[in-house]
Length: 195
Image (cartoon, rainbow, N blue to C red):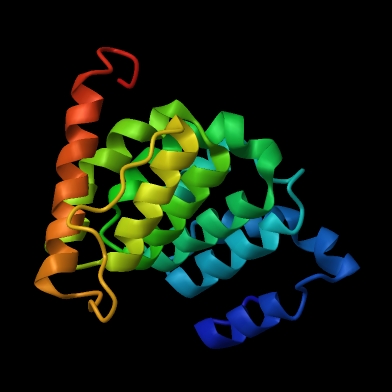
């Protein structure tokens, strides 16, 4: 574990995954969350998620703010597994809805749907246009699903889908942009309800 070889350290850490002996690593794991190598930080975050009682809100926030997308994704994974953290960490997830990593963004949007907090409504709507314009159909669809789940509001696609219509066709893109405008207009009618 004291090796300067990052791969050896990472493999050693992973050998403890789901092992009762992991308790011996509690204090070192906190230290390794600050390790210069992102792989070690990522594995440390994953191992800590095996023992949620070791995580603190402060640690989860640090993991979600890490410069490495792999470490942030480990944080999202940990939060998905531990609904007991959701109330305390909701605000920390908001920036991840627009994360530069498209994988993190996608999973953060899915997590927002599960958490089902009105705090997510505005940032979910704010990202719709970008997803539509860059033809990120999956993330766009997840944003809409999250919004429908949180608000109870649903907008059918206009123009409506036709058999044989491709996911990235002009018609599909226009339907996504139309839905974006309708969500934006809906938000304007809500006043201060979704700040």
